[in-house]
Structures are given as C-alpha cells and as structure tokens.
Amino acid sequence: MKRKTLSILILVVIGVILGVIAVNLLSSRPGMGAKESYELKDDEFRYLNPELISYREMRNYDLGLLSASGMAYYDESLWVVGSTSLLRIALDGSPADMSGIPSGSSCVAVDAEGVYVGFRTHVAHYAHDGSLLSVWPDLGEGSVISSLALHRDVVYVADAGKRRVLIYNRKGLLKGQFGGDSNSDQGFVVPDDQFDLLVNGHGELWVVNPGKRRFETYSDDGRMRACWQNTVTGIAGFQGPSNPGEIAVMEDGAFVTSETGLIRIKIHEPDGAFRSVVAAPELFKEEGRAPEVCVGKAGFIYALDFDRDMVRVFAPKTEQPE
Image (tube, rainbow, N blue to C red; front, side):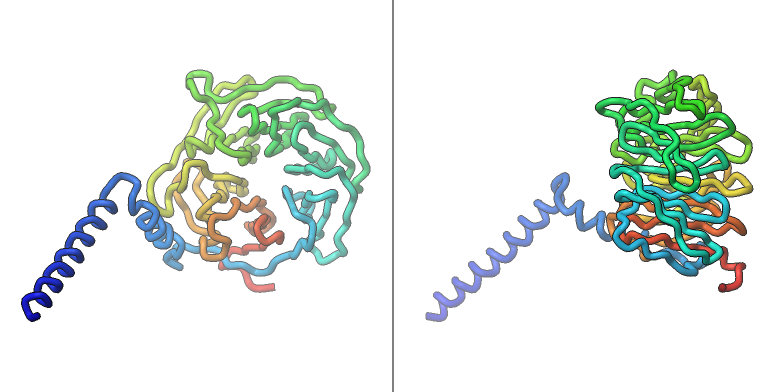
C-alpha cells in the first residue's frame, strides 16, 4: 500500500514538472506572452512623473448628445461640429449658439472669412451665424477629409483616404495637391482616418505623417522643406504604429500633440524636442481616440475628448484658478 502511494506521488510530481516545462516553452515562443508584456509596459507609461506635467485641468464643457467630430478655436470661442450641428461655445460665459448642418462632418476650421466644415468627401463654407455660403465639389469615393487649415487666401485639406493634401482658394477652386515627399516610395503613411495638418505663425504648412511618426513641412508645390521624427520609447517619443493623431501650434511655434491608443497630450519644441506633458494617459479612456487639440490665449489648451463627448480645458500651472 505504501509502495502504491509513493508511486502515485512520484507520478504527480513528474506531471507538475512537465506542466511547468510546457508552460515555459509555450510562453517563450514568438507571439506567446507578448500581450502580458505589452500590458505591463503600457501600464508603466500610463502613470507619469508629476514633475513632467506643466498643465492642470481647470474645467470642462459637456457636449451632451452632440457626438462631436471636430473643433476649432477662433475669436475667443470654440467651434464644435458633430451630429447635425455647428456649436459655438463663447469662452466669456455667453450662451452657446447652435446651427444646423448636414450629418457626416469630420473637421472644422474658422477665421475671419467664415466657418469651413469638412465632410467625408467635400468641404462646405458657412458664415459665422451658421448660414450656408457654398458647397465645394465632391472628391469622390475613397476620400476621407480629416483636417482643414486656413492661411490667407488658401484652404489646405487633408485627405486621409487618398493620403494627400489638397490646396484650394477661398472660392473652392482646386489649385494643387501632393501626396508626400516625392523622393519617398511611400509618401504619406496613413493607417487610419487621423491625418492632421496646420499652418504655424510663420505661414509654414506642417503635416503629420502618422505612420512614420514624423512632422513634415511643405511648400505649396509639394516640396518637403524640413521634417523631424520621434520614435523613441518613452514620454519623449510617440507610441504605437500611427501617431500623433491630432496637433496644434502655440504662439512660440511649439507643437501640441495628441496621441491615440495610449492617450496623452504633450508639448514639443519647434525642432521636435520634448518640452512637457499637458495631460497624462490616466485622465483618458484606455485605447481611446486622440483628442482634438486647440490653443487659446495665455497658452490655454482645449481638448475635445471624443470618448467622453466633452471639451476639457487645461491651463498652465502658473495660471491662477478661475
């Protein structure tokens, strides 16, 4: 009886040892155990050193059922599009104004000439009071308008679907287009519908090449003038296969960047060097969409949180609370 019990015990021990060996072999195979490793790494980046954070969240604007799709800053107001509405939020506390627009808006840009709303395959021009002024020609199947930028008599349109930048005059006449660096076989690498551009205070057109995690500045004839790229691991770089998703520019030429996936909002110097963090990942939904970002007076940064359907207001820590 004792011999039989001992034999069973030995078999159990051998079984446990074999099981441990099998688990170790499986976890060491390519692709096995990678998810756990990534999650640990992701969690490590989610919580940042507070000394890196130069902004604090002051307040937010709940957008209710708007289902916002884009935001712009102009004339001390936030202009938000979504669902079938154009919403103007006056930052002085005045009542908000809302106008009806067709469904399917994707982005918006505003200046003294009016409100330009991007839809999937066309642009519409509105007056500040929301009245329609013109609808521009449709770009056709395959186009996905993702961003607009205004400068003097030019409207720049980012088309994520066809990975190109189109250049229009203010009447909606197409003046030119380009698809990225002509010396590159790939041009713009745009894995999804987040493809942003802007014009800085010097009149320079900057375009995010998200698949390369690179900022590129172009002349209107499509020549790349300069670029900077940041793929390093850690807070100084851009994580994931396609980032940043949204950008804005500050008065001193620094870039505000917003990343998708592991959401975080940061400031980079004009040459790409990391400056500071505006909002850490812990403030946002995990694996969410990069918030739209705008810069207002006194360095205030406004973030359109698509996942929570609200505008979040971040102020430099040197600013006093309202």
